[in-house]
Image 1 (cartoon, helix red, strand yellow):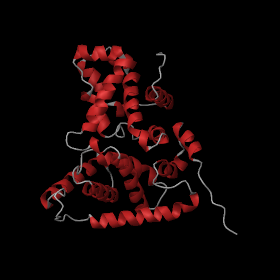
Image 2: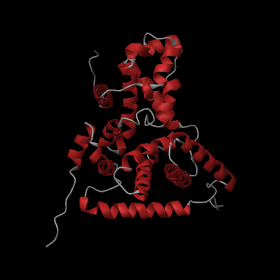
Image 3: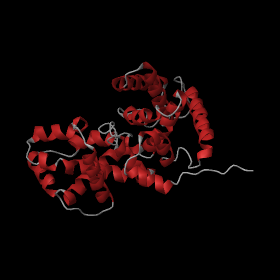
Length: 295
């Protein structure tokens, strides 16, 4: 008799993810939400093995600098320089040598698969969020592979955030400025009075999708992923604006230096669960084009 196949109800999973997943379910849930794994539970072991094998092939192929007839491929010298940049950036954020090598391999693979972009500082901080979640759920080599494919889903869908000129980041900043005119016009006015430009703080935010600022608060990513990869960037911009709105009463009374200090150091703010829920609620209203009553 054929074994009954078990499926994850993706609609229910998205609803749970919006309100925050438990640590126990987050590993598999993110992989399903990002379409790295299918909703079929019975196929997960097979698919994880396939992802692991595919990543191992990529890592081996891109292990050393090599000349290529493809005119888009970087020279050996530029590849060597890029590898040094990756190693320097990775060592800035990791604590263990074993992790260093996993991060470096993953960033080398992605940068060589996307030679026009290469490596941009901060990419490894996005990868780190996935690695930190999966390390508690999977074997070492599986962690690296699954973190890579998850990272590639997000970064690969926003390559213009990392290309020359980073037009994607610029567009995101422009959208934040535009939406500020609707949702917190008094902050916009105050910024103009002080000479504060949104890019002074939001450039760093959007270059890593605020993963750097909220790496310790995975429920923020739960909410992002619950909407699907296709909606990630739109919601991410809405979330960034919600952070500005959250600090409105503080920044509107500050001078130039203190305003930037607050907004450039949001990672140091001791976010409570209630405050994170408020951020996400405001984000969804902005994302869906609604209005809200300010407190």
